[in-house]
Amino acid sequence: QVQFVESGGALVQPGGSLRLSCAASIRFFSSYSLGWFRQVPGKQRELVAKITTSGAGINYADSVKGRFTISRDNAKNTVYLQMNSLKPEDTAVYYCNVVDALGRPYFGSWGQGTQVTVSS
Image (tube, rainbow, N blue to C red; front, side, top):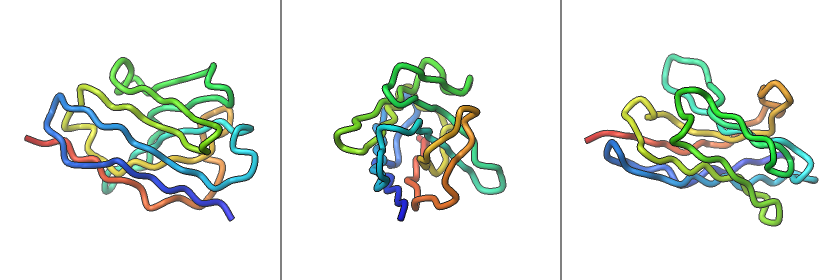
């Protein structure tokens, strides 16, 4: 059974930083590309960053490029999202999932997500 457990979200002031973690209980974790998504009420979940199996291939949404950094630790079955220079528009629930080559989520089941709120 696939399970994703996201953590690290918090209330932070604009310009602040957070580091999100996602622990995935999936076999052959290192064989999958992974992505971080975010969702705000009333909007579709959007991909913000994805990383290939070895970490050599990384892509970001234009809205977070230069501020967010995705990384992974295959030994810990964990993917991270370092978020710097946070803006109010980054406020959302953040999720992780396995992604395909086009950045689409692979598994239909999602974790509970972690809430990031950027506000003064």
